[in-house]
Image (cartoon, rainbow, N blue to C red; front, side, top):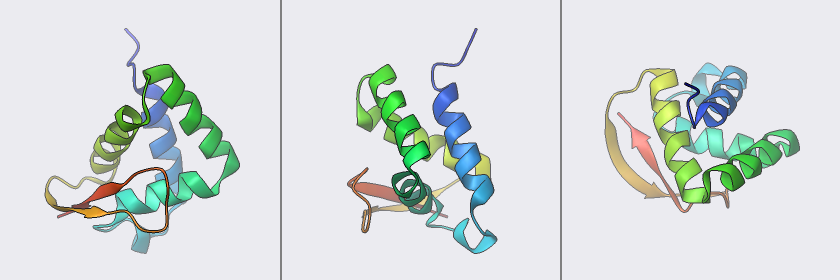
Length: 95
């Protein structure tokens, strides 16, 4: 059975593969959102996932989950306001 969020996972993996090692630290979720918003192709895929899954907050939650798994971070330090990106209001700082 296909994973409902496979498209989100694929998007996250592609974005992370382009990030520098220094961008994969505790603020990697923010960096993924900023990269998606800044690339028209990725933004179109994000919008498509939002339509397919029903709501942006659903996609945003899965972006956080898949990002944590992709980079191997287990814990979350805190939730902070998102700066410099309009896709999400906040993100998890990873520990």
